[in-house]
Every structure is written in C-alpha cells, then in structure tokens.
Length: 174
Image (tube, rainbow, N blue to C red; front, side, top):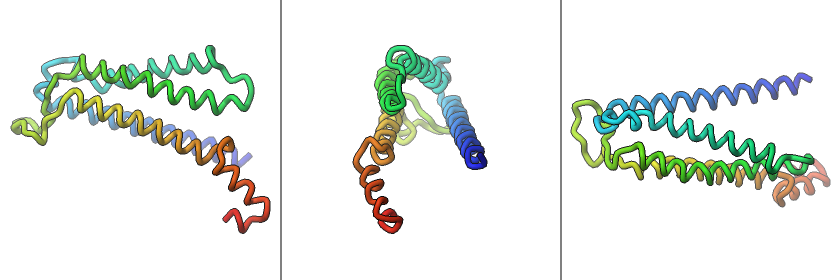
C-alpha cells in the first residue's frame, strides 16, 4: 500500500510539473508577443499562444470521445492500441489546425525584439516559422511516444527479449 501511495504522489507531482511548465511557457509566449509592434497591432496575434492551447483542448476532447465512444477499450489488451490511436490522432488533427491558426492570426512577418530595438534578420519571424516550431514539437512528441512504447511495451521484441533473459537468473538481466 505504501508503494501505491508513493506512485500516486509521484504521478500527481509529475502532472503538477507538466502543468507548471505549460503555464510558464504560455506566459512567456504572451510576454514575447507583447513586445512585438506587429503582434500588438492585432488582438488575435496577441492571443496566439492561448488560441493554440484552446484548439489543443478541443482536439483533446475529440480524441477522448473517439477513445470512449467510437473505439472504446473493451478488454485490457485494447488499452495500448487506444492510447496509441489517441496520440497519433491528436497529432494529425492538431497539425493542420495549428497551420490554420498561424496563417490566420499571425502577420506574414513580425519582429520579436526589445522595445526600441530595430527589427533585424535575427529578430524577424514569420507565421510559417511559428507553425514549423509548433509542428516540430507535435511530431517530436509523437515520435518520442512511439519509440518509448516500442522499448517499454511487452507487445514488442525488446521487452520480450529482456523478459526471456531474466528466466536464466538475475545476472543476465543486469
């Protein structure tokens, strides 16, 4: 029971850390948007970080609906497939949504520099560059999730090989 409590606390702590990182990065993006004259000119551009988050939440609702009503878990062995489907589906849906939000709400070119500082090549950004950053994060997260699943799931060979080697003793496991 003590180990279960430790695990629950660890998971809750990781969730709090993730939320903290998410909130901090959103606030940082809002601060950066506030120093750009081109982004200040349009309220939608200023709210861009929040729009991305809001659409992400809507995509999350949709993928949860798919996982609970369209392709629900009926047996324990279905859990892994449904979770993988949610991860892939959310990435595939959010990518074009982020493209559309970037195109509609960000100016073609904008500067991210300190107030009073000239706009240079080093401080210039584009809506497409912002989209590429978002898409890179989405697809890197998907790739990380799929690779992690491959090396930690009993459905794939690496974990089965380790399990098989443990049958001969602890030394082969180490």
